[in-house]
Length: 198
Image (cartoon, rainbow, N blue to C red; front, side):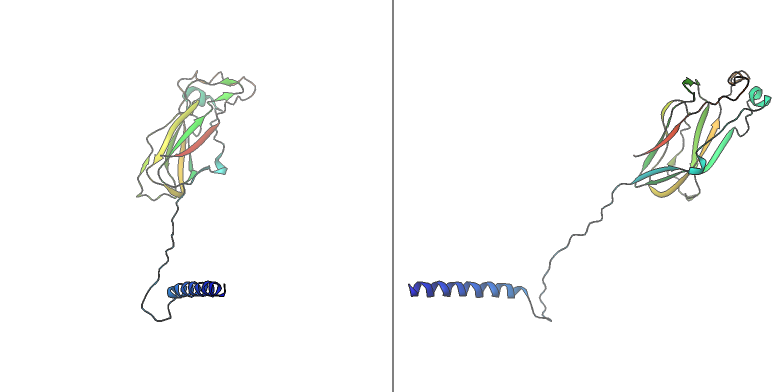
């Protein structure tokens, strides 16, 4: 019995020494030429971002008919209104901007036809040499969603000018019966800009 215990104790002692020696084999004294490696994974993770903002000081665009000339010749004061740096975009990669309009409404009464269209252009934060934008579309603000402009690359804080062009006047009878004779009548379109990845 004592012999078995002695053999077992000896085996355990040998196993312990071998284990310790194995661990010691991984730790080398300073100055030795052997190397030990242990890798680390480093990832660059680029998550998509997108944002579009309308300049908060440019939230209302007015076209007013307030003279006989406006009604009879269509020469509305400020017929074309350009808002510089109207939209600010943050986007990783190519993107497209669309516009959704409610159409012009006075309460529940719609104003049929096309009355205002919009035109996009480069704002003050975009270098003159950057030309990877598509500004071909000039959508009307009639009801619905339409493609507006797009970019083949992304950017941070890209600003875009937007021109609102009132081109609905066709003849002196186009708008002359819109006002009720004693006070102004306003037709309003709610316009929403949306950005999406291409």
